[in-house]
Length: 209
Image (cartoon, rainbow, N blue to C red; front, side, top):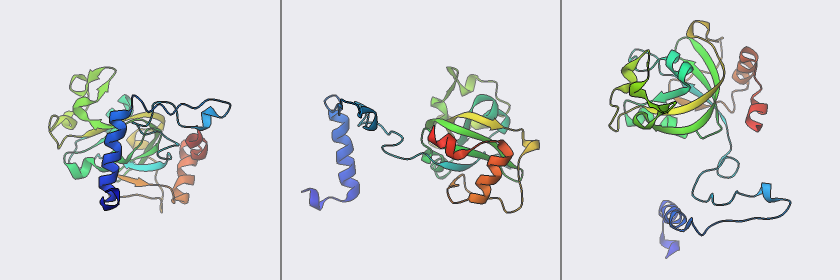
């Protein structure tokens, strides 16, 4: 029967079985090399180093004509967001816990380097210190538009490593910029070197932590 299933159908069946059996799938490993194997009881969740490798991404903060977001809020409260339509929220869901982000403000430049602490979730489920975004003193409250429907913004929690205000954004000729929301910087060696110099970071070291 399995040979007649598509790859997607097989994946869905496998995922369902893992969720249902997760109480008995302990994948216990003992001995000196235990740390090299997948931790116990983790078949039902994604883990860096096992299910994906952390990467460095360009992320557009989304400050523009629509004025839905504020870099001041993202910087102060530790998050990035995208949305107001499914096609706009989908890209930010690519980010995994542990990924590094280089935040970019269109027409200005790069404003921050950070690490993803949590994957994207609807704005209505995102909190700052236990408080809903609705109850936070945001400088731009337009992010709350479509707060409780599928067009809502999706928020990713970020631990900022280095940031600057918009009027000190880092930019130079030939540096990578992108019209879309999220893009890999994996092959952008010139931009990586520029960001490391400007923000005083080492991406190889950060990704190995």
